[in-house]
Amino acid sequence: MSFPAKVMRDGLLEKRSSGLLQLWKKKRCVLTEEGLRLHNCKGGGGGDAPSAAWSSKAKELRFDRMATVDCVEYKRGLVYFTVVMATGKEIDFRCPQDGTAWNAEIALALVRYKNLQAVQTGRNRHLSTAHLGSTGEDEEL
Image (cartoon, rainbow, N blue to C red; front, top):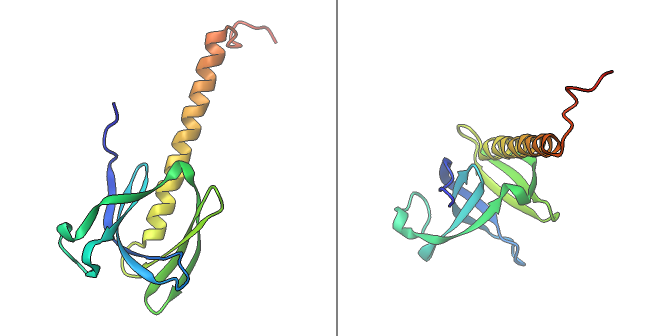
Protein backbone atom coordinates (compact mmCIF):
# COMPACT_ATOMS: atom_id res chain seq x y z
CA MET A 1 0.00 0.00 0.00
CA SER A 2 1.49 3.35 -0.97
CA PHE A 3 0.72 6.67 0.64
CA PRO A 4 0.47 9.93 -1.30
CA ALA A 5 3.80 11.75 -1.34
CA LYS A 6 4.09 14.91 0.74
CA VAL A 7 3.64 18.07 -1.36
CA MET A 8 6.62 20.38 -0.90
CA ARG A 9 5.59 23.11 -3.36
CA ASP A 10 2.71 23.76 -5.72
CA GLY A 11 2.64 26.53 -8.32
CA LEU A 12 3.24 27.65 -11.88
CA LEU A 13 6.23 26.98 -14.11
CA GLU A 14 6.68 27.36 -17.84
CA LYS A 15 8.04 24.37 -19.76
CA ARG A 16 9.57 24.63 -23.19
CA SER A 17 7.84 22.30 -25.63
CA SER A 18 9.93 19.76 -27.50
CA GLY A 19 8.20 20.55 -30.80
CA LEU A 20 9.61 22.44 -33.76
CA LEU A 21 8.63 25.90 -32.44
CA GLN A 22 9.72 25.20 -28.83
CA LEU A 23 6.98 27.34 -27.30
CA TRP A 24 6.78 28.04 -23.57
CA LYS A 25 3.68 26.45 -22.01
CA LYS A 26 2.33 27.16 -18.53
CA LYS A 27 2.19 24.12 -16.27
CA ARG A 28 0.89 23.66 -12.78
CA CYS A 29 3.78 21.94 -11.02
CA VAL A 30 3.57 19.94 -7.83
CA LEU A 31 6.90 19.13 -6.19
CA THR A 32 6.72 16.06 -3.94
CA GLU A 33 9.22 13.84 -2.13
CA GLU A 34 9.05 11.49 -5.14
CA GLY A 35 9.45 13.99 -8.00
CA LEU A 36 7.76 16.72 -10.02
CA ARG A 37 4.23 16.41 -11.46
CA LEU A 38 3.30 18.63 -14.43
CA HIS A 39 -0.37 19.39 -15.09
CA ASN A 40 -1.53 20.89 -18.41
CA CYS A 41 -3.81 23.89 -18.55
CA LYS A 42 -7.24 23.08 -19.98
CA GLY A 43 -8.48 25.69 -22.43
CA GLY A 44 -5.29 27.71 -22.87
CA GLY A 45 -5.95 30.18 -20.04
CA GLY A 46 -3.14 30.41 -17.55
CA GLY A 47 -2.20 32.88 -14.91
CA ASP A 48 -3.74 32.09 -11.57
CA ALA A 49 -6.57 30.01 -12.98
CA PRO A 50 -8.79 28.05 -10.59
CA SER A 51 -7.82 24.43 -10.02
CA ALA A 52 -10.70 23.26 -12.25
CA ALA A 53 -8.83 24.74 -15.23
CA TRP A 54 -5.91 22.33 -14.71
CA SER A 55 -5.91 18.81 -16.09
CA SER A 56 -6.09 16.04 -13.48
CA LYS A 57 -3.82 13.94 -15.69
CA ALA A 58 -0.19 14.73 -14.97
CA LYS A 59 3.20 13.94 -16.44
CA GLU A 60 5.51 12.81 -13.67
CA LEU A 61 9.25 13.45 -13.57
CA ARG A 62 10.35 11.03 -10.86
CA PHE A 63 13.57 11.60 -8.93
CA ASP A 64 14.67 8.01 -9.49
CA ARG A 65 14.83 8.84 -13.22
CA MET A 66 16.28 12.34 -12.78
CA ALA A 67 20.02 13.02 -12.92
CA THR A 68 20.41 16.72 -12.10
CA VAL A 69 19.09 20.28 -12.30
CA ASP A 70 21.39 22.29 -14.57
CA CYS A 71 22.00 25.44 -16.59
CA VAL A 72 20.66 28.15 -14.32
CA GLU A 73 20.45 31.52 -16.06
CA TYR A 74 18.82 34.78 -14.96
CA LYS A 75 17.33 37.05 -17.64
CA ARG A 76 14.76 39.87 -17.44
CA GLY A 77 13.35 38.77 -14.07
CA LEU A 78 13.11 35.09 -15.03
CA VAL A 79 15.12 32.04 -13.95
CA TYR A 80 15.83 29.53 -16.74
CA PHE A 81 16.90 26.01 -15.79
CA THR A 82 17.14 22.50 -17.19
CA VAL A 83 16.15 19.20 -15.61
CA VAL A 84 18.38 16.44 -16.95
CA MET A 85 16.93 12.93 -16.87
CA ALA A 86 19.00 9.75 -16.41
CA THR A 87 18.48 9.00 -20.11
CA GLY A 88 20.16 12.30 -21.04
CA LYS A 89 16.89 13.98 -22.06
CA GLU A 90 16.86 17.67 -21.12
CA ILE A 91 13.67 19.50 -20.14
CA ASP A 92 13.79 23.31 -20.02
CA PHE A 93 11.79 25.40 -17.55
CA ARG A 94 11.48 29.04 -16.56
CA CYS A 95 9.85 30.85 -13.66
CA PRO A 96 9.77 34.34 -12.09
CA GLN A 97 12.89 35.27 -10.14
CA ASP A 98 10.97 36.40 -7.04
CA GLY A 99 11.16 34.38 -3.81
CA THR A 100 12.76 30.95 -3.62
CA ALA A 101 13.39 29.74 -7.14
CA TRP A 102 11.89 26.47 -8.29
CA ASN A 103 15.25 25.23 -9.54
CA ALA A 104 16.74 25.43 -6.03
CA GLU A 105 13.81 23.60 -4.46
CA ILE A 106 13.84 20.86 -7.12
CA ALA A 107 17.62 20.44 -6.77
CA LEU A 108 17.40 20.21 -2.96
CA ALA A 109 14.54 17.71 -3.14
CA LEU A 110 16.51 15.63 -5.66
CA VAL A 111 19.60 15.58 -3.40
CA ARG A 112 17.42 14.67 -0.40
CA TYR A 113 15.85 11.81 -2.40
CA LYS A 114 19.23 10.48 -3.63
CA ASN A 115 20.67 10.66 -0.09
CA LEU A 116 17.73 8.70 1.34
CA GLN A 117 18.19 6.09 -1.39
CA ALA A 118 21.90 5.79 -0.56
CA VAL A 119 21.18 5.40 3.16
CA GLN A 120 18.55 2.77 2.42
CA THR A 121 20.96 0.87 0.15
CA GLY A 122 23.62 0.98 2.88
CA ARG A 123 21.17 -0.31 5.48
CA ASN A 124 20.07 -3.11 3.18
CA ARG A 125 23.70 -4.13 2.59
CA HIS A 126 24.42 -4.04 6.31
CA LEU A 127 21.35 -6.13 7.08
CA SER A 128 22.16 -8.66 4.36
CA THR A 129 25.78 -9.10 5.55
CA ALA A 130 24.61 -9.40 9.17
CA HIS A 131 22.02 -11.93 8.07
CA LEU A 132 24.67 -13.97 6.21
CA GLY A 133 26.73 -14.37 9.35
CA SER A 134 29.83 -12.34 10.05
CA THR A 135 29.40 -8.84 11.41
CA GLY A 136 33.08 -8.52 12.19
CA GLU A 137 32.42 -8.01 15.90
CA ASP A 138 33.76 -11.37 17.11
CA GLU A 139 36.78 -11.49 14.78
CA GLU A 140 40.28 -10.87 16.13
CA LEU A 141 42.56 -8.34 14.51
